[in-house]
Amino acid sequence: MWTQRTPEEVAKWHEATEREARSHGRLIAGIVWVGVSVLVAGGWFVSFRGGFATHSSTSGSFWLRLPIFAALALPFAWFVYRRESRSELAKLTRRSICTKCEASGESEPGTACQCGGTFVAASTVRWVED
Ligand SMILES: [Zn+2]
Image 1 (cartoon, rainbow, N blue to C red):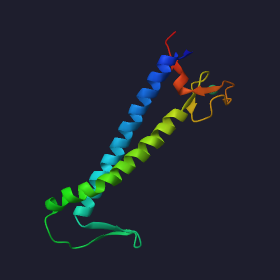
Image 2 (image 1 turned 90 degrees about the vertical axis):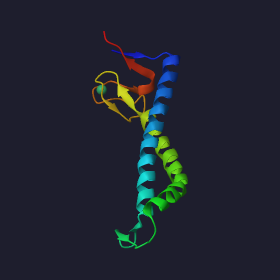
Image 3 (image 1 turned 120 degrees about the vertical axis):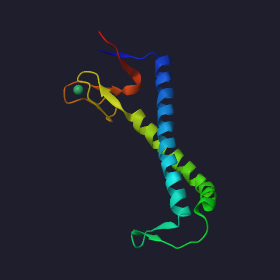
Image 4 (image 1 turned 45 degrees about the horizontal axis):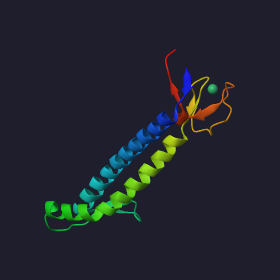
């Protein structure tokens, strides 16, 4: 059955959720950072007008340019990290559960469920075995 979390448990839930959101942000930002650095250092630029990638024949060593572009792409990766972890945190915090049929969604806490139950914020309840 679902029981109310104590204030300490709610605080722990928020801590864990923030960690989860941050690690999600790190993952996305890491992929973007590596991807952008490698593409730009490799001389591949996405042409938004043409909608396809064009290869500009740039000379010089790829491995020499990679750290330079990786450093240049770092502020962008930081921006992606901040944006992604914020939106993930908002998504996780919005999560609510119907304590009657266990449907989960993003309904406002207090919203009536189709089964006749009521949605509550996922942060305020936890499941315990009877
Ligand atoms: Zn329900």
